[in-house]
Length: 490
Ligand SMILES: Nc1ncnc2c1ncn2[C@@H]1O[C@H](COP(=O)(O)OP(=O)(O)OP(=O)(O)O)[C@@H](O)[C@H]1O
Ligand SMILES: O=P(O)(O)OC[C@H]1O[C@](O)(CO)[C@@H](O)[C@@H]1O
Ligand SMILES: [Mg+2]
Figure 1: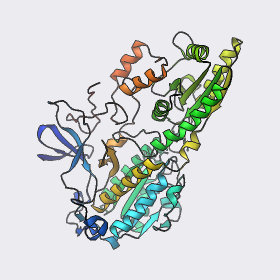
Figure 2: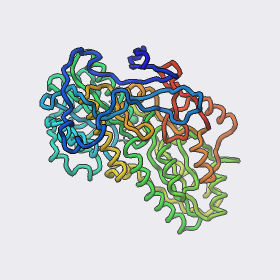
Figure 3: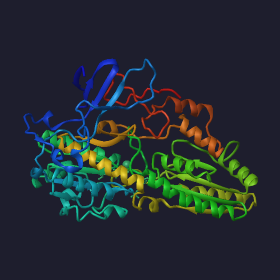
Figure 4: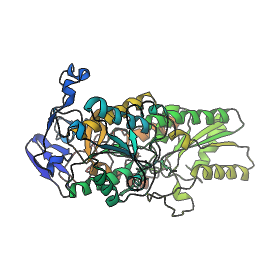
């Protein structure tokens, strides 16, 4: 590795040969020099001592972009997660806490369970506190004692045993509480808003010079967090959405001119709707926030519904909750975290289509299904459970090794530690000029609702990096504080 630098917005950057860039995560020794180290207790753990090369090499990193040409620079990398030979906390010195914030998501309890288990079984840490009811619980509620026994069965339940909330992020009060209680590892599970909150908590802790590691575990069924392959709970959400789509299809198939409308979550992005549609094959039209649509006239939704009902006799529409909001009467209502409160677009579109058919005296049997909260309130499925387990383990390994100000995330199938600013600077969205959306359009055969002007505009937009998209690579090109997505091969 050739050189180290710290850019304006505090990101630690290491550059190397052939365009190698490591967007590194902070370490406690960046601001507290001469911290004592201890041999990793895993050395004497029978489960791990037989594993060849169990400890991660300090120089291991994971490339963000894996599709390359022979002459492309090596590009942006993230530090590989996993246990290190040395740890910066003695087992009996650690007082950890876990907090869950934002909306529910399948797998929250699994992550809580695995943090508690990993701390205890791998590192001999048995002082773990649960923060009750999200960020505000730090300063307004008593803590909950978490032991392996207390959390043993919680992964079978939906929700979060700790409770969650929106709003209430008072940085000073939260850090005062961390300091007063003597907490030195903070595990923060939540979405984009939560991780922005985690980032300012980390900054304040650093300003105060505290030996406290802050680790985020990104949560969001919407999959709106950039860089990572996907967020935990997403697979479960897509799977559960199949039940609603299936019901809509059965209802529609059994009626004359049957139309099933299913609303799925996705405030600003349509990943659940897109993947649920691709998985189901019963969906004739998928509407997402990133792809504007219109109702009337040539190429509009009414025309497509009429055509489909005439040709097939029934139809299913999946609509993401954030789709078409610009067509509804705007009300500027916000939740406690400042997120826009959306109008019920599923109800609106159902009403509009019904009115359209009634004006023409045509029969329509429309059933509207809104399974949104049912989808996010269930426990995680098998693959999300494994994913949650590994994310939690990576967060614990990172904190014990003295890393801080990071989230634990999967990049190209490898567990990594990603600096907060890489995931808070923008939201992940479906790119409608990307192959994946084209695949959906060709699978449903729906109109794109796009004129050439909209397509031009969409192409100009910066492509957010995500592996759920076809080509989400981000080649660092020097301006490392921002996301410098270079549109790659299509
Ligand atoms: N910019 C920010 N700075 C500090 N704290 C924030 C910020 N944005 C949100 N938060 C805090 O993070 C917590 C969760 O935020 P929010 O309700 O937006 O959910 P989220 O984490 O984005 O999850 P999701 O949207 O997936 O349900 C809230 O307590 C909120 O006060
Ligand atoms: O009703 P709540 O709890 O604010 O949550 C709704 C929001 O939560 C999300 O599921 C994100 O967690 C969004 O898709 C949705 O708009
Ligand atoms: Mg959010």
